[in-house]
Length: 438
Ligand SMILES: NC(=O)c1ccc[n+]([C@@H]2O[C@H](COP(=O)([O-])OP(=O)(O)OC[C@H]3O[C@@H](n4cnc5c(N)ncnc54)[C@H](O)[C@@H]3O)[C@@H](O)[C@H]2O)c1
Image 1 (spheres, rainbow, N blue to C red):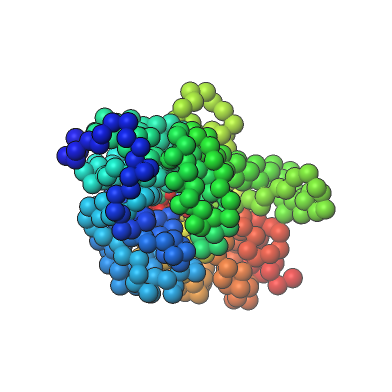
Image 2 (cartoon, rainbow, N blue to C red):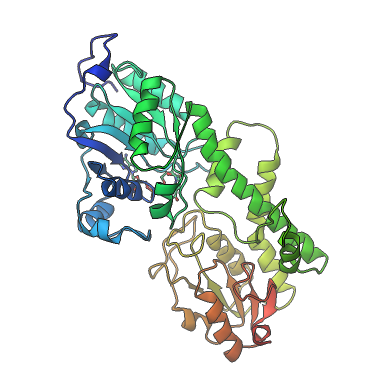
């Protein structure tokens, strides 16, 4: 496609010629990253608006409700001063366009860039001379260069002459956006001084510190942050398996290894996945043909659901038994199920042909959202899920599960528990509920 606007005079210094933008920022894609960012800009006194293709999300935000769990923004969203539009033409009013759409993986080891491509197509006709375009979605190395090429191919604007372009990754953890947007250093990647300065000024409205670099290094900062965590947790999971092989207790070993020892910190085992950690490793591997450490980490983390099912089955049969699965989202105290390993655990449990599998997750609606090939499931109230149950799998470490297992211990002391998160607090992965009373 080709934009319809008139090209600016070449070699003009556009920095000296600001068009009359009446907004500072337009966030394109106001999901779990874009909405907290927009609300934080609002709180910082930035004139900000949003664009999103999701009508239900727009309806929620524009009537003062958070469409998902992200604490800290209650008053800001209720003020209705952050408005999300359907029409991308609104970007023409804002000096900066921040793109925060999703970047999932295809089924191959390949980033699905369709959301970014559609944003570029929808925004291009409304681009104006002097616009700053900030890509903030997590992307594979080289993607911001692709955006630059796309703009040169499909518009009459040139980056560094008519448009400014930067990659400024989002590094918040879900559930902590309100604090972290204000406290984390912001990385600004750009290839020309004016783009870098404009993006630094913009994110300087929020962040205590700005670190400047080029496109690819900024892309890699984000990926390395996430992949380091993914590998760190894979190592913790591998240690849990090794300890189990030797009949040893990973929690006890971990406690002693970490206690007053200054040189490393071994993480707790768990179901490690989620929309960022799992997919971001794929973005790196897209560009590497060799088997490597990252693929091993992937295999390790992906194996944990099978490990839990196999090892509980060694202790008690699962066939024809009543099984509860506590937690369905990918991590504690979130309502996000994207790339969660819990649906995979559910499917492995189904293969054991139990009488019933009762899924319970108080952070989610009933039925649960469909995820990775598993249809919506009945979401049981916690105590109903545990009534008359034979086995319990703790798939997510939501805070209410420790007390719930204590109640189970009183009513069903012989029920078996697979508790990789140690929510029972007795430093064992597999135990009978009665052990919680000792
Ligand atoms: N969720 C996190 O905690 C987190 C943290 C850091 C980085 N990231 C990265 O940020 C990016 C966004 O993630 P997210 O969790 O916010 O995803 P999300 O799916 O919650 O939000 C993306 C939003 O973009 C909208 N959208 C899609 N196409 C659009 C279009 N053409 N025009 C306008 N809006 C469009 C969607 O409707 C959705 O509301 C991803 O690259 C992700 O990896 C996410």
